[in-house]
Image (cartoon, rainbow, N blue to C red; front, side, top):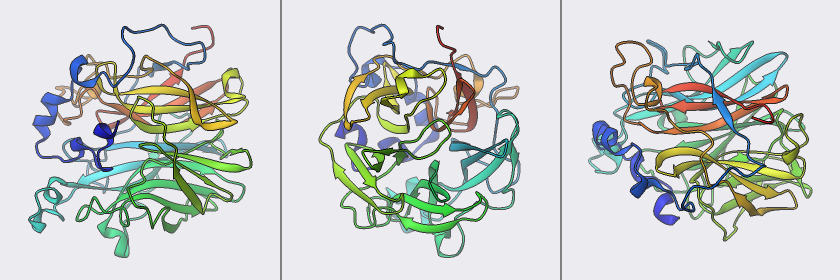
Length: 373
């Protein structure tokens, strides 16, 4: 598993060549099976499956704004939360950046993009309007040097808590500068930056997945909030502000953490006494696909079962999921082919709306299948 996670920075983040990535990021059972059992096995009864919205993508880069995107990166990896009848989408927006290229370091010069977090809203979860068209939330003042990515947003007992990854591309392997970052708000509009969640970490803590219900409220388990992090790390907190992390010594296939849900919800009896952790990574031959891992709420560190099949993966027949522009003539826009990853979902009636990245360039929607399908 460490071969996948490396030192906290993936090999494929090092953007030496977009079109080299185009050739590598495609279905390949030899390279990307991901440690799952062979042959493929039938679906466990606890698994939540999804169908894609025919009108995808539901959100794309702006034409001239701060989130205009660049080759291989657009608007994606966001979290959705409902408030006052509206969907609020806190997304990762990308733009070109050459700030690290002058350093002369071969690793540092790989990073030709930088990200911030934007907000969009929607009445139906399908058509989104930007609320931050002029600039993102966090890259202001001294924080202009950082890239902010991949959102986990939850409602706490008092206010809202936004976790994301913060990166310093001039020193990307330093855990004192990079990793899970926290900001808080009372109204989803005005945010106070708290800084790195684990400022004294000995290795990079990234991809915070706070266990939440389908209304995106953080849930206490055994009296404490629980956060999954990449590569065998877990953390707990009494207040969502101060977290204590630990190595849990157990790893499961599926790659990175996407989101973690629990709690009683119409149509999802398996969540009453269990946690469902969604993962993203090498899966059954796909470069990046979404998987699911089941835990008992009484033991959030010990997986009960891993779904052997991906529940969401790229369709090469769809331009926006195969590295191409969603609009004709569908020219290439991203090297991230065969790549589906997400960090946000929310409950809508007896279904789940899951917002995933198409080729790391677009935001797309998938809905959970009704019971019995």
